[in-house]
Image (cartoon, rainbow, N blue to C red):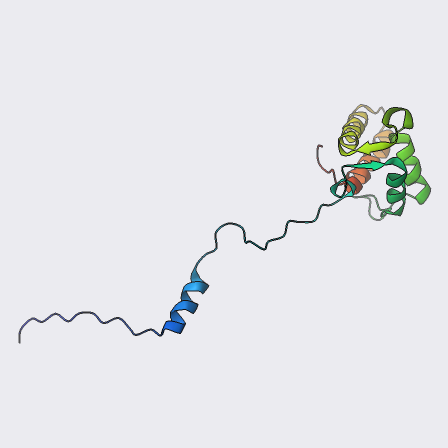
Length: 141
């Protein structure tokens, strides 16, 4: 009995199974070609600027619910007045851009911080949160 080495035999794999196994176990790296980008949210995800009449009309049709208030909301009339008060004609003219809206939200945040009473702060905070959600400019814009 001599020492004979036998070469290890690999198991026979059918070609059909090889292609299925190798494709299913390879990790995908990077983005897929057909991956869609998420749809823009808020009013300024659709356009860069809005005519003030169209903006007021869209806000009147928007959800009246104030974020974080448990179902309380603004009336149809209050939403229209909010645009007239926060974006006066003398300052913003006929069109309101995304940058102007972001600037006005920063001003609201500053007004909220410097308000004297808690009632004033609460009113400003509700307006700011509502507009951030509707404009799609949440966070510190």
